Image (tube, rainbow, N blue to C red):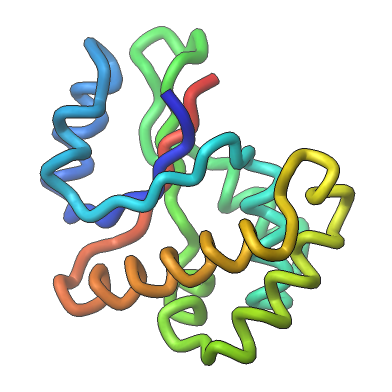
Length: 149
């Protein structure tokens, strides 16, 4: 399965983590608000975070790459990572112009377009994440991302 962003409460995150440890998380995630992100990788998430927040790169990398939950043997498989609150809060209030400009910069960052992430695709994901961030805030949930390794 591919990368998926989702909004979850602490209790919902525990359910997703339990499912990730024992089986496919698709059924559990179907009950949550999600945004599919295809083949997005953690490095691209870090690039997006840096572009949106302008925070210290070392702080962003450390926070983004600290799993919200790891499998029982830490042998790979599904990894659940938190989306930094600073990123989620800023994504929730981007204007269309901001999204377009950000998508152009993100697509140009570190060869992202070479992996099929052109400005249009980046913009679609940013718009979807913006809506997900708004929903999460309204429901007092946090944003997470599931990567399969």
